Image (cartoon, rainbow, N blue to C red):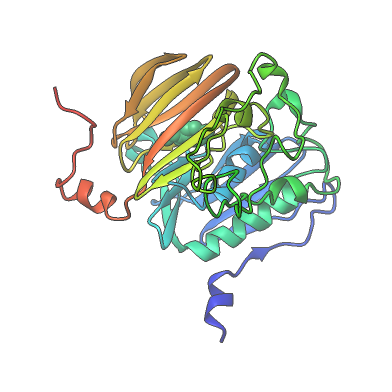
Length: 335
Ligand code: PHB
Ligand code: FE
């Protein structure tokens, strides 16, 4: 038996005779879609059959993030019922486990999978369920419809690869293509963002060591929404700017403190307790505001107009355990 292939095993049905989509099985969970909805079904802890329905476009936007981010940090809630928890070698898929009402009714279920298996299943589902013309990373006004019977595919959009810089973007030898140099257009919402580049005056001999670029110009040409990219990595300090429009397609539950710097326009955040979903705070962030999301919260952002957000992550692989053991705090500062 080939162990790695087995870990990545995907269980899928033949395409449905009417609407053309495959159904998928992951442990005790089954997933199917029709013209408008994704349906998830499971057997509850107390032995009953239960199902959950999500709008197909919202489901695919959430699935796209979970696949592209390799399950992210901590919790990726697709909505108030289903989602994943990253344990960094394995991943939980759950239904109702972080919903106080469902949990106390005993109708929740959580199962743990090797990351390869759930990753391969989700990637296959995303591929089969995403129709031609629908881009789950695009703002709703910038993409076609997710609905209807199966029509083609949108593999170029769902397999966008991150461009990896080998050194500071723009320096000689860096292999990453700059978005502006590739000719990507400035987004309609950022028509007023200056496109000039910083002046550079390196001392002779240091021309290949010193560089700077206009991050706002770079972001103004982003094709995607709610997809943080790494622009600087200093030890475990990751600066991840992103362009946001409409709703963050997932509700992120932290396993560490996370910082937000609102670089322009505004985002409204709903914050809740990550275990129960009980509302904790509304945070209205305007240009220049900073906020820290504590390790015990979940949050979802609403960006009325395309905006620029810097997400600052602590990528330390030991931090989750330090927080769990009480060695590291759940909050950025204690007053
Ligand atoms: C977050 O969950 O903190 C998050 C995710 C994606 C974004 C912004 C923030 O684009
Ligand atoms: Fe977050």
